[in-house]
Amino acid sequence: MIYFCIMKWSYLLIASFFLGGSFVPAPAKEKITVVIDPGHGGSDPGHLSSDKNHKPEKELNLIIAKKFGTYLQKYLNNVTVIYTRSDDSFPTLDDRVNVANSMGVDYFVSIHCNANERKTVHGTESHIHSMQSKSSVNLAKEFEKEFSTRAGRKSRGVKDSDDRAHSLQVLKYTRMTSVLVECGFLTNEKEAVYLNTDYGQDILASAIFRGFRSHITHEHPGIKFVKPVSSASTFSSSSTTTTAKPTTNSTGKYHIQIMSSKEAIDTQSPEFKKLGLGVTRTKLNTSSTFKYRYTIGPYSNSESAGNDLEKVKKNGFKDAYIINLSE
Ligand SMILES: [Zn+2]
Image (cartoon, rainbow, N blue to C red):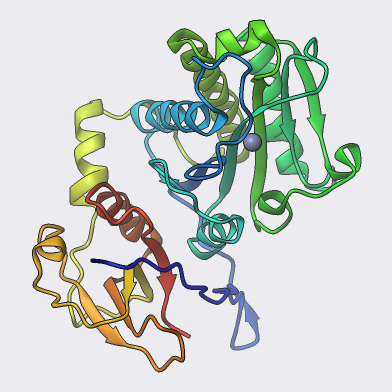
């Protein structure tokens, strides 16, 4: 029996721009990283349609999120995609924020569907924390524009914490351009049907992709976001060749924590070996009942850690996450 335990890890990395008293500009980026966050999951279904045949919000969020991520990987090079969940697990809001803040991420896009007591209410919304964040405002506007033009939805506009009269944790605490999209209202009969069709999900994901593409090509004029030579090579490179195999003499700070346990588990057990990545067991000096931590790594950059994280999650360790052990 394997026990999983999400452990808190501390906040990471404050980039040091001042070295030896002189200003060192950040190197021009060649790649941008986006965290896609399918809202809810696991025991938290999110909003529900009144039609029992309809999928709960958590499932629709995951479908649209994956379609969006697939568009990014298929049509743009230079974009690394990381999901906060890729299955029916439930990362806490802290986990979602920490994944984004710990990995040098440039964009955070959370995908949700909406609900309202009044069943006539319908349309899309793009939420940001504050109108002060110009990049978030612009990205949110691009999403709403495409929801309206590409998907033919009714755009209800860009909303910040003042409009909502409350903050959203994943927007307030993520330290990058962050937008939460509401793809439509499950409480509106017509929109719930649309959200539950393959067609609707495709068009919504495509609208999010187009809005994102417009925004990043404008924000990063130095990066050529072109279609990869062939989509096949993109998928193989993102899953294998760009992934640095962790070695014991590597000096990176990023690790993938795959699980914790009460009793020591052999790192050569089949569950670990099938990952093919080399698992390290560490005995923790803790009063917690979970005494052992199992990690993969280190990785010197967040992209290779992110690539292996997807692989690890697909291989049964769905609660795995990236940690920074440099502190
Ligand atoms: Zn939601």
